[in-house]
Image (cartoon, rainbow, N blue to C red; front, side, top):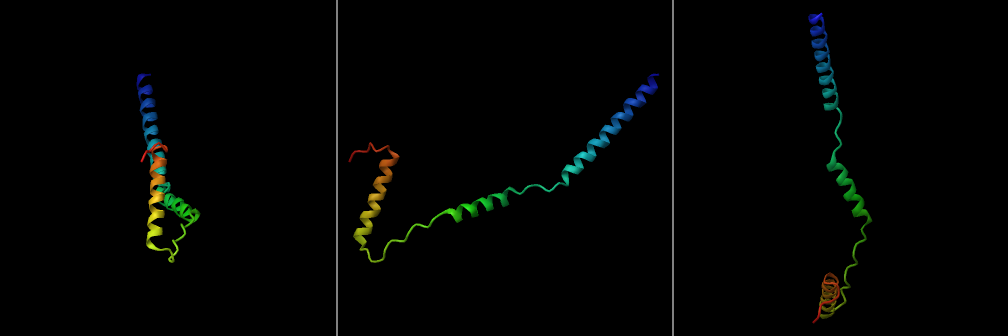
Amino acid sequence: MRRGLAWLTGGLGVAGLVLYRKLRRARAHEPAAEPAEELRQKLDEARAREEPEPAPALTDDLETRRREVHERGRAAVEEMHGGSEES
């Protein structure tokens, strides 16, 4: 009786091992999703949604453009500090 039980247990173990290896090989042959391609698609979509910033008018003089840039910079600093910046 013990020999029969040992053969049965050994046979089930071998069958389990064979099944495990088959399943593992089947998973290895599945095509993997390419995260790089997905990220490229998302980036292309984001770029398509962005609206380009209008170019500064070429007729503006240098001093006017300089003032505008400084005003935007100061506004950005004030926004980052919560508007509590004192001059």
